[in-house]
Image 1 (cartoon, one colour):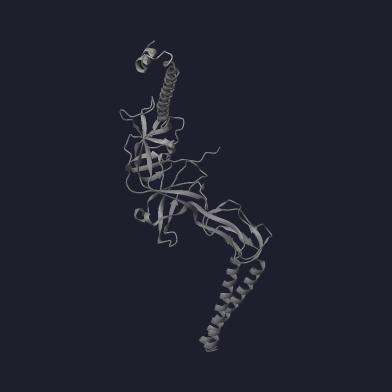
Image 2: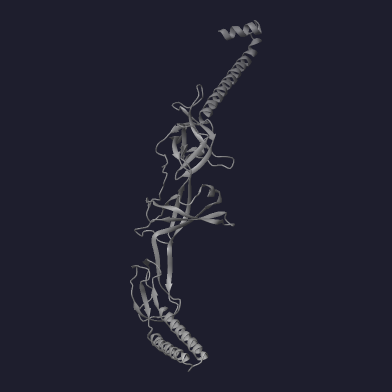
Length: 399
């Protein structure tokens, strides 16, 4: 009994006797209290250590992201603008005179030549009046000739000859005026082009200025657009351009710059440009919206990333690189890469791509999806299911 012997040594030989028997319960009680408190202390220390270890493991779990390798591409500066097509020559045709439609010489959508007769108004009364005026002019001519002959033999005065000359000029002017009035009742194509939809019918009374049909010269066709004034130093007449329209996805129409407005708009600080685009098949129509692209300067090589990789912020744009974790770094088992944020200087964009002028080396692994949940040093787990599409010329897809 080691405990009893220990107590006897400490309490004296009276332990176990009648007088010392009163210390036995107290010793047992103190021993039990010491054991209980010792156990509690050991449990609390163990729980604190385990909790600290658990929290340390949960503080930085691996984040699933998509990554892409930063590649280098030839990149040429391009000006992109939205514009609209307009005809080289285009007009809504109408007559200066009023009257009833007598003849129609065209169908909607016809291609016509310059000067071709399109429509005639009834002009019987005007033609009859023209004949009367011509007769008056012929009489004035005869009177002038007669008086000129009599003047030679002094049978008529010079005043009579002068009056006959003036009368003849007036009669000829009346004839010319009536011929012009009749001509106003005939509609002719002012230039070669394609007609639109006919707006009038036979027998219809037309007031002066009523639109009859539109005619548009479609080949070539103009594309008008604007660019900021900063682009002026890179623009010259004759530069090649490419145009694309939503009506023909995936197709590019080529042309050249034919005019640069000498005036910059004071409100927008943009300069208006005009390009001529070949349109032999007539598929491009005036009024259609188009995207114009003008490539300027020599090609340069830039590191190219998908735009989804860029974290845009007011204090600077940045990307997250996936880097090998350093030796001795605390990362979850099986995790070899951690996130490192770096600031970048961007160049132009091209579809889903953006040029990086500074901040990302060629061949670096860049996080392209999932970076919004990252911080410096976050362990990474790669996934290919969330990789975003990258296209230099993206097009909308109908669902």
